[in-house]
Amino acid sequence: MNMLILNDKQKDYINKISAFILLNIINHVTENVDLVCLLLTCKRLFNFSTVNKYHQLSFKPFEFKGPLLSDKCQEPIKFFTIPFLHLGSFSRMYTNAFSDTMILSNKENIKDKEKIAQIQIIKVSPKIDEKSKKLPETIEKIEFHCTNNVDFKIDPSHLGIDKLTSLKILKSYCIEEKMGTIYCSLPTSLTHLSLHLERIPSPTYFKPLINLVHLFLLILGWPNQPDEMYLEIENLVNLKILKIGMIDSVDSSKIHLSPNLLEYTQHSGAIPNRTTEYFPPTLTILDSFFDENDFTNLSLGTRLPHLTSLSIHTDSVLPMDFIPARLKTLRIFSKYGKVIKGRIPDSVEPLYSNTPISLPRNLEEFSFVSDCNQNISPSVEFIYPPTLISIEFGRISNQEIPSVNEFKYIPSKFTTFNKANVYSIVDGEGFILPLSITKITVKIEFDPLNSEFFIFRLDHLINQTNIDQLVIDITRTNFQVDIRRLDPENNNIGCCITEVIGGWPSMKLSNLSSVTSLDVFRPINIGPLSEKFFPINLKELTFYFWTEKYYKPWILYSTTIES
Image (cartoon, rainbow, N blue to C red; front, side, top):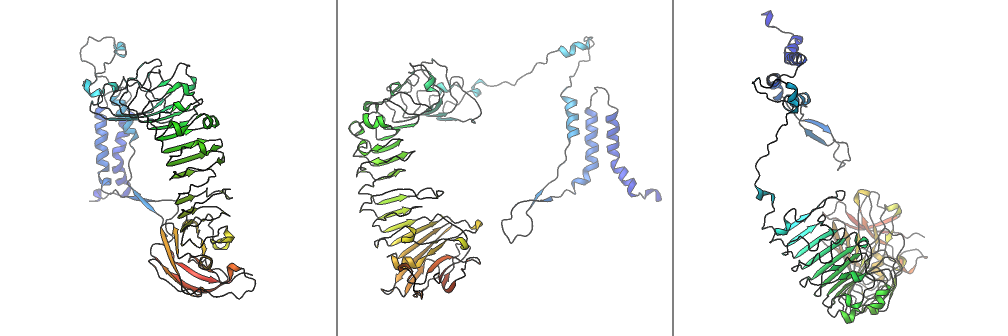
């Protein structure tokens, strides 16, 4: 019985005996012998020695080092993964056993074994149906995409694209044919074609594509081509939309447009020496770069009677008589902010511009939101029409606000209370709201992770304007305050906050004698409720309201006025 009692050292030796056997076998393998039996032995011994371990596998946690999503979560975030065994030695053994193994015949006719190395091993490929190497003939749309760093070009005839009689849409950044190719190897069934080309193979390259309706071309190396290279698409009578982009400028004499175009867009490089006859008279949408010569030589109003949308990209002064009178949509883009001379036609309805403008008389809604990262206000002068109903401003100062019903304001500074700015749409902030404005919307880009918030001065709206509805459009939720003035002196005001609790703040007169006309009453501010929010001079908490839509309550409170 004592023979059956094993100590821990003996048990450990028995558990490791399979490893000792493997090491002994491997150490005695010195020649290129068949290792299949050895591998099977290794596999058998390995499975035998680890069978019990597989029943004890468990998930091992590890800590994730990073910011916690919640202050309430004190425990580190844990992920669980299963351990794995790296069998690198077994992988090398299998590689040595099979990759360099050649099975030799038992016949003795191969006496010179050194010639074995010169025997060519014939690779037998599986039989492939020739039809499987072709694209299906019923395909209607093909897109080729490749990364920016890969110089990958495709000849359409090599893939059989020219045989796809059902193909309607082709978009490619890599199709290329040899210079001098008279006609493209693309199917005539195409209606939409988008190509990026280094150069145009020949002037008649696109001539067979008589069914094209939409053509987009980005030509990267056109200026380096010979003088006889042209883009001739005047025979494409079905072409309605043409968008063309070039790296450098190309003379207009090298481009012959389709006679029935409805939309023409030119990106990047300029096209100098254009005349009025350059544009087809059927155009309804025109988007192009124009310079001083174009403003002098082109007469869009007489040449393009159907034009309804015009986008002008220019670095020159834009005269308004260049714009057709029947235009509906106008977009103006000026890199250097050149002044527009004259008056925009009254037929314009949507208007987009980054330059100083005079607004059309029939305009009803106007938005001007400048770059929020600018530290100064843009110098812009507007002439507002009497039909304007709603206006939206961003960072802008000392502007004359027109007679509108609704005004939208976007504050641009957010900070903690100690450095907070109290926003008021009054003269001190550069705004004087006319009495015709009854609604104001304040849009706040709120970032609670950085403890940023804003404070809004409500008593200025009550006393200095006719605002009866204040909408605070803040990230993730809206607050709407309906103001009801109960007496001419505004001593009693009713405020109803949509979906939250209302209140009756009291407009108390200030005891200070040095107050300005705007500060006759003790200030009433609206802002988020926070431990860091309450100012030192807080005297009276008028009322507060809470909403489940936002993670913090907001309050209305009253403070004394600093002398």
